[in-house]
Length: 307
Image (cartoon, rainbow, N blue to C red):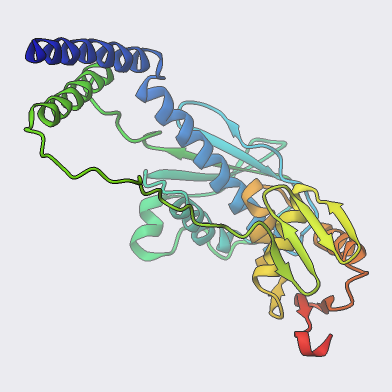
Protein backbone atom coordinates (compact mmCIF):
# COMPACT_ATOMS: atom_id res chain seq x y z
CA UNK A 1 0.00 0.00 0.00
CA UNK A 2 2.81 2.36 0.91
CA UNK A 3 4.61 1.63 -2.37
CA UNK A 4 1.45 2.23 -4.41
CA UNK A 5 0.83 5.52 -2.61
CA UNK A 6 4.39 6.64 -3.28
CA UNK A 7 4.13 5.83 -6.99
CA UNK A 8 0.86 7.74 -7.27
CA UNK A 9 2.46 10.74 -5.56
CA UNK A 10 5.43 10.65 -7.97
CA UNK A 11 3.08 10.36 -10.96
CA UNK A 12 1.03 13.34 -9.79
CA UNK A 13 4.21 15.36 -9.20
CA UNK A 14 5.41 14.53 -12.71
CA UNK A 15 2.15 15.74 -14.25
CA UNK A 16 2.03 18.96 -12.22
CA UNK A 17 5.68 19.90 -12.81
CA UNK A 18 5.47 19.10 -16.53
CA UNK A 19 2.35 21.24 -16.96
CA UNK A 20 3.90 24.07 -14.94
CA UNK A 21 7.13 24.21 -16.89
CA UNK A 22 5.30 23.78 -20.17
CA UNK A 23 3.06 26.74 -19.33
CA UNK A 24 6.04 28.90 -18.36
CA UNK A 25 7.77 28.04 -21.62
CA UNK A 26 4.59 28.83 -23.58
CA UNK A 27 4.29 32.34 -22.17
CA UNK A 28 8.02 33.09 -22.37
CA UNK A 29 9.13 35.44 -25.16
CA UNK A 30 10.74 33.88 -28.21
CA UNK A 31 14.56 33.66 -27.96
CA UNK A 32 14.98 35.58 -31.23
CA UNK A 33 12.89 38.51 -29.96
CA UNK A 34 14.64 38.59 -26.59
CA UNK A 35 18.10 38.51 -28.20
CA UNK A 36 17.20 41.34 -30.61
CA UNK A 37 15.80 43.55 -27.85
CA UNK A 38 18.90 43.01 -25.73
CA UNK A 39 21.17 43.78 -28.71
CA UNK A 40 19.24 47.01 -29.37
CA UNK A 41 19.67 48.07 -25.73
CA UNK A 42 23.40 47.34 -25.72
CA UNK A 43 23.91 49.21 -29.00
CA UNK A 44 21.98 52.20 -27.67
CA UNK A 45 24.17 52.40 -24.56
CA UNK A 46 27.39 51.92 -26.55
CA UNK A 47 26.56 54.70 -29.04
CA UNK A 48 25.42 57.13 -26.32
CA UNK A 49 28.67 56.50 -24.44
CA UNK A 50 30.67 57.10 -27.62
CA UNK A 51 28.82 60.34 -28.39
CA UNK A 52 29.27 61.51 -24.81
CA UNK A 53 33.03 60.92 -24.87
CA UNK A 54 33.44 62.56 -28.28
CA UNK A 55 31.67 65.73 -27.13
CA UNK A 56 33.67 65.84 -23.90
CA UNK A 57 36.89 65.54 -25.90
CA UNK A 58 35.69 68.51 -27.99
CA UNK A 59 35.16 70.60 -24.85
CA UNK A 60 31.37 70.21 -24.79
CA UNK A 61 29.99 69.05 -21.43
CA UNK A 62 26.52 70.56 -21.69
CA UNK A 63 24.93 69.35 -24.93
CA UNK A 64 22.24 66.73 -24.58
CA UNK A 65 22.66 63.71 -26.82
CA UNK A 66 19.46 62.80 -28.73
CA UNK A 67 18.07 59.28 -28.59
CA UNK A 68 19.70 56.62 -30.74
CA UNK A 69 17.51 55.79 -33.76
CA UNK A 70 17.25 52.38 -35.39
CA UNK A 71 17.18 52.73 -39.19
CA UNK A 72 16.84 49.07 -40.11
CA UNK A 73 17.43 45.55 -38.86
CA UNK A 74 21.13 46.19 -38.26
CA UNK A 75 21.61 49.98 -38.59
CA UNK A 76 21.65 52.60 -35.82
CA UNK A 77 22.34 56.34 -35.87
CA UNK A 78 23.02 59.03 -33.27
CA UNK A 79 23.09 62.77 -34.02
CA UNK A 80 25.92 65.01 -32.81
CA UNK A 81 25.13 68.71 -33.19
CA UNK A 82 28.72 69.84 -33.44
CA UNK A 83 32.00 68.76 -35.01
CA UNK A 84 34.12 66.24 -33.13
CA UNK A 85 37.64 64.80 -33.33
CA UNK A 86 37.29 61.98 -35.89
CA UNK A 87 40.68 60.55 -34.84
CA UNK A 88 39.18 59.65 -31.46
CA UNK A 89 36.10 57.93 -32.90
CA UNK A 90 37.50 54.44 -33.76
CA UNK A 91 39.07 53.64 -30.34
CA UNK A 92 36.18 55.20 -28.38
CA UNK A 93 33.53 53.31 -30.37
CA UNK A 94 35.36 50.00 -30.12
CA UNK A 95 35.90 50.48 -26.39
CA UNK A 96 32.17 51.16 -25.90
CA UNK A 97 31.17 48.09 -27.93
CA UNK A 98 33.61 45.91 -25.96
CA UNK A 99 32.19 47.17 -22.65
CA UNK A 100 28.71 46.06 -23.70
CA UNK A 101 29.87 42.75 -25.18
CA UNK A 102 29.08 43.50 -28.84
CA UNK A 103 31.35 41.41 -31.08
CA UNK A 104 29.72 41.75 -34.52
CA UNK A 105 31.54 43.20 -37.53
CA UNK A 106 30.35 46.70 -38.47
CA UNK A 107 30.65 49.69 -40.83
CA UNK A 108 30.85 53.30 -39.61
CA UNK A 109 29.68 56.34 -41.55
CA UNK A 110 29.78 60.04 -40.59
CA UNK A 111 27.02 61.80 -42.55
CA UNK A 112 26.11 65.50 -42.80
CA UNK A 113 22.70 66.04 -41.11
CA UNK A 114 21.44 68.53 -43.70
CA UNK A 115 22.78 67.21 -47.01
CA UNK A 116 22.97 63.52 -46.07
CA UNK A 117 26.42 63.56 -47.65
CA UNK A 118 28.93 60.96 -46.47
CA UNK A 119 31.97 62.74 -45.04
CA UNK A 120 34.00 60.01 -43.36
CA UNK A 121 33.78 56.29 -42.65
CA UNK A 122 35.51 52.97 -42.19
CA UNK A 123 34.98 49.25 -41.59
CA UNK A 124 35.69 47.42 -38.34
CA UNK A 125 38.28 45.19 -40.06
CA UNK A 126 40.28 48.27 -41.10
CA UNK A 127 40.64 49.32 -37.47
CA UNK A 128 41.09 45.83 -35.96
CA UNK A 129 44.12 45.05 -38.14
CA UNK A 130 46.18 48.22 -37.79
CA UNK A 131 44.32 50.38 -35.23
CA UNK A 132 44.15 53.02 -37.95
CA UNK A 133 41.43 53.94 -40.41
CA UNK A 134 41.13 55.97 -43.58
CA UNK A 135 40.61 59.76 -43.44
CA UNK A 136 42.38 60.14 -40.08
CA UNK A 137 43.65 63.69 -39.63
CA UNK A 138 41.05 65.36 -41.82
CA UNK A 139 39.53 68.53 -40.41
CA UNK A 140 35.74 68.63 -39.97
CA UNK A 141 33.70 71.73 -40.68
CA UNK A 142 31.42 73.07 -37.96
CA UNK A 143 27.96 71.59 -38.21
CA UNK A 144 25.66 68.71 -37.40
CA UNK A 145 26.72 65.11 -38.06
CA UNK A 146 24.95 61.75 -37.92
CA UNK A 147 27.12 58.91 -36.64
CA UNK A 148 25.77 55.73 -38.28
CA UNK A 149 26.84 52.17 -37.48
CA UNK A 150 25.68 49.13 -39.44
CA UNK A 151 26.33 45.61 -38.14
CA UNK A 152 26.87 42.51 -40.25
CA UNK A 153 24.48 40.65 -37.88
CA UNK A 154 22.24 42.07 -35.17
CA UNK A 155 22.43 39.45 -32.45
CA UNK A 156 23.88 36.12 -31.42
CA UNK A 157 22.16 33.17 -33.14
CA UNK A 158 19.29 31.86 -31.05
CA UNK A 159 19.40 28.44 -29.48
CA UNK A 160 17.80 25.71 -31.56
CA UNK A 161 16.54 23.94 -28.44
CA UNK A 162 12.76 24.07 -28.07
CA UNK A 163 12.08 25.76 -24.69
CA UNK A 164 9.01 23.61 -24.05
CA UNK A 165 10.93 20.34 -24.41
CA UNK A 166 13.77 21.78 -22.36
CA UNK A 167 11.50 22.69 -19.46
CA UNK A 168 9.62 19.38 -19.66
CA UNK A 169 12.95 17.60 -19.52
CA UNK A 170 13.91 19.60 -16.47
CA UNK A 171 10.63 18.60 -14.85
CA UNK A 172 11.39 14.93 -15.52
CA UNK A 173 14.82 15.30 -13.97
CA UNK A 174 13.35 16.90 -10.85
CA UNK A 175 10.78 14.13 -10.49
CA UNK A 176 13.47 11.49 -10.98
CA UNK A 177 15.57 13.02 -8.23
CA UNK A 178 12.53 13.17 -5.93
CA UNK A 179 11.75 9.51 -6.61
CA UNK A 180 15.32 8.47 -5.90
CA UNK A 181 15.30 10.30 -2.58
CA UNK A 182 11.89 8.83 -1.65
CA UNK A 183 12.86 5.26 -2.49
CA UNK A 184 16.08 5.36 -0.50
CA UNK A 185 15.88 3.42 2.74
CA UNK A 186 15.29 5.64 5.72
CA UNK A 187 18.02 5.76 8.34
CA UNK A 188 16.80 5.86 11.92
CA UNK A 189 18.12 8.90 13.69
CA UNK A 190 17.90 9.75 17.34
CA UNK A 191 15.29 12.46 17.80
CA UNK A 192 16.55 15.84 18.84
CA UNK A 193 14.83 17.94 21.42
CA UNK A 194 15.42 21.11 19.42
CA UNK A 195 15.51 21.91 15.73
CA UNK A 196 18.51 24.14 15.01
CA UNK A 197 17.67 27.32 13.20
CA UNK A 198 20.09 29.07 10.92
CA UNK A 199 20.76 32.52 12.27
CA UNK A 200 20.41 35.24 9.66
CA UNK A 201 23.39 37.44 9.05
CA UNK A 202 22.63 40.93 10.27
CA UNK A 203 23.26 43.57 7.69
CA UNK A 204 23.97 47.10 8.80
CA UNK A 205 20.77 49.10 8.41
CA UNK A 206 22.72 52.35 7.99
CA UNK A 207 26.05 53.52 6.66
CA UNK A 208 27.68 55.62 9.38
CA UNK A 209 30.01 58.52 8.55
CA UNK A 210 30.99 61.31 10.91
CA UNK A 211 28.03 62.02 13.21
CA UNK A 212 25.58 61.12 10.44
CA UNK A 213 24.31 57.95 8.81
CA UNK A 214 22.53 56.91 5.63
CA UNK A 215 19.84 54.32 4.91
CA UNK A 216 20.70 53.53 1.29
CA UNK A 217 17.77 51.20 0.67
CA UNK A 218 15.16 53.78 1.71
CA UNK A 219 17.19 56.82 0.54
CA UNK A 220 17.21 58.48 3.97
CA UNK A 221 19.91 60.67 5.51
CA UNK A 222 20.18 61.05 9.30
CA UNK A 223 22.15 64.03 10.60
CA UNK A 224 22.58 64.73 14.35
CA UNK A 225 19.20 66.47 14.69
CA UNK A 226 17.35 65.80 11.44
CA UNK A 227 16.14 63.22 8.96
CA UNK A 228 16.16 63.96 5.24
CA UNK A 229 14.58 62.22 2.25
CA UNK A 230 17.07 61.91 -0.60
CA UNK A 231 16.38 61.75 -4.32
CA UNK A 232 17.80 58.81 -6.28
CA UNK A 233 20.71 60.91 -7.58
CA UNK A 234 21.45 62.46 -4.19
CA UNK A 235 21.53 59.03 -2.57
CA UNK A 236 23.78 57.63 -5.28
CA UNK A 237 26.22 60.54 -5.08
CA UNK A 238 26.34 60.52 -1.27
CA UNK A 239 26.91 56.76 -1.23
CA UNK A 240 29.86 57.26 -3.59
CA UNK A 241 31.36 59.88 -1.24
CA UNK A 242 30.82 57.64 1.83
CA UNK A 243 32.55 54.70 0.17
CA UNK A 244 35.51 56.93 -0.71
CA UNK A 245 35.56 59.31 2.26
CA UNK A 246 38.69 61.44 2.67
CA UNK A 247 39.66 60.59 -0.91
CA UNK A 248 39.72 62.98 -3.85
CA UNK A 249 37.22 61.93 -6.53
CA UNK A 250 37.76 63.35 -9.99
CA UNK A 251 34.78 64.87 -11.81
CA UNK A 252 35.05 62.31 -14.61
CA UNK A 253 34.93 59.45 -12.08
CA UNK A 254 31.87 60.94 -10.36
CA UNK A 255 30.15 61.46 -13.71
CA UNK A 256 30.81 57.88 -14.76
CA UNK A 257 29.75 56.39 -11.40
CA UNK A 258 26.55 58.38 -10.87
CA UNK A 259 25.25 59.50 -14.28
CA UNK A 260 26.88 57.76 -17.20
CA UNK A 261 24.93 54.48 -16.82
CA UNK A 262 21.77 56.45 -17.61
CA UNK A 263 23.20 57.81 -20.88
CA UNK A 264 22.71 61.45 -19.85
CA UNK A 265 25.03 64.43 -20.31
CA UNK A 266 24.79 66.37 -17.05
CA UNK A 267 26.99 69.45 -17.54
CA UNK A 268 27.07 71.34 -14.24
CA UNK A 269 24.70 68.94 -12.46
CA UNK A 270 27.55 67.55 -10.34
CA UNK A 271 28.06 70.97 -8.74
CA UNK A 272 24.31 71.39 -8.20
CA UNK A 273 23.97 68.04 -6.42
CA UNK A 274 27.09 68.64 -4.31
CA UNK A 275 25.56 71.95 -3.21
CA UNK A 276 22.37 70.14 -2.16
CA UNK A 277 24.31 67.59 -0.11
CA UNK A 278 26.29 70.35 1.60
CA UNK A 279 23.05 71.97 2.78
CA UNK A 280 21.71 68.66 4.09
CA UNK A 281 24.96 67.94 5.97
CA UNK A 282 25.62 71.46 7.29
CA UNK A 283 24.61 70.69 10.90
CA UNK A 284 27.19 67.86 11.10
CA UNK A 285 30.42 69.74 11.85
CA UNK A 286 32.48 66.57 11.43
CA UNK A 287 31.78 66.53 7.69
CA UNK A 288 32.80 68.78 4.83
CA UNK A 289 32.58 68.30 1.06
CA UNK A 290 35.65 70.12 -0.27
CA UNK A 291 36.04 71.19 -3.89
CA UNK A 292 39.46 70.90 -5.52
CA UNK A 293 39.37 73.37 -8.39
CA UNK A 294 39.63 71.77 -11.78
CA UNK A 295 39.87 68.25 -10.35
CA UNK A 296 36.85 67.16 -8.31
CA UNK A 297 35.51 66.78 -4.76
CA UNK A 298 36.47 65.11 -1.48
CA UNK A 299 34.24 64.21 1.50
CA UNK A 300 36.37 65.03 4.56
CA UNK A 301 35.36 63.13 7.72
CA UNK A 302 37.05 64.08 10.98
CA UNK A 303 38.26 61.29 13.22
CA UNK A 304 36.47 60.82 16.57
CA UNK A 305 39.29 62.33 18.58
CA UNK A 306 39.03 65.51 16.48
CA UNK A 307 35.29 66.00 17.07
